[in-house]
Image (cartoon, rainbow, N blue to C red; front, side, top):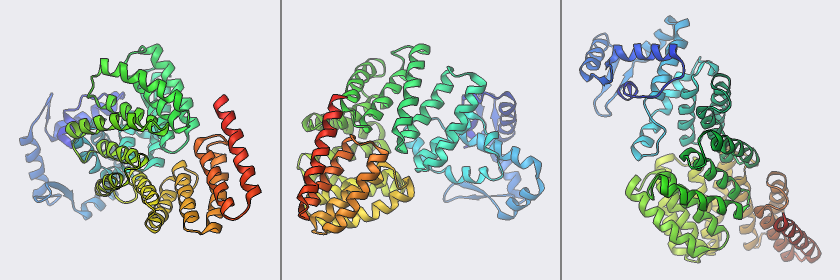
Length: 458
């Protein structure tokens, strides 16, 4: 970690903090633009001679005895906050914001260190670049609330220090917009994405990679909002420009290709979706590795397409592999793991394995509520799926109760004419028919038709 930080070329935007960190790293082994492992080992050996640090040969890690931790906490007093800030800054400098498998695995080891370094530290004292890097670790850990707090702080600081139009400020705004999207706050995400996109066009130009990234993120928000044609139009432009600027195999190009495939799938263009997803998956396997989060997401997307094509056995086989890999990489309660579990349950439902579907849906719904919240769109999607399972099991009263709750929440969160809201209304109408409440079913079907007309005309 210290070597990585010493060799980093990142600028902290704070000369005093930069000097303090450089002084610390110089004492540990930094020599101009090089790192001296010999100097570092001498420092460690000197500390170890006083039993201040221990080395774990099996895991190749250093640790400080708990008594030393306690002593430093009571002795350093006012300097402790400064030391924690320095350590947090060293952690942030030790990794770039890139998506290679090695970097993702390394960042996963840093969460505990960050948590320890945050005690007694005022978040307002954290450097904006450091805050952005902490947010990245929280993102990959699935800690969305913590991530948003750091991104808001970084954005506000950069606005004050650098100005609203500075590229670093725009990067902070883009990160925050993506977090809004992850938390299901799609309207907030859209507003911020539009601001960043227009500013990047003016400051960087329409063909700059950062501008294309903004276009891709805005398209992803349109996709979530059910504005499929808007999403597709932007995605096609980004892919064509991205291939020319970055190449066919750049991670950004592959991500937007995968998003376009999702747009095709949602619109029923399943062969187009499959063709694109197969290309994306093979390239990600080769470039990133089979266990990289981006590769696993691509596998999950292809599984969803297989399911919608009716290739249920292929969909199940692939989804099970992805789910197990996600559990191993992220844990059972990470939002990415829960999404794969949700989709696998849909495959079980389509296979007529209603008990298997229900068991997975109940577990996923409860965990999603805990991780993302009761009103997150993914929680509502899970509730709608479980209501469908209840209906097909003949548990019509349970299906009705959950269906009504889901529909009302979707209206509030997504709007009356969002595709997911309309699907929930159609499902509830089907439940009413099963209950013999034909007038209620007919009324609901009529509302769906009117809302769909309104949507298509808007």
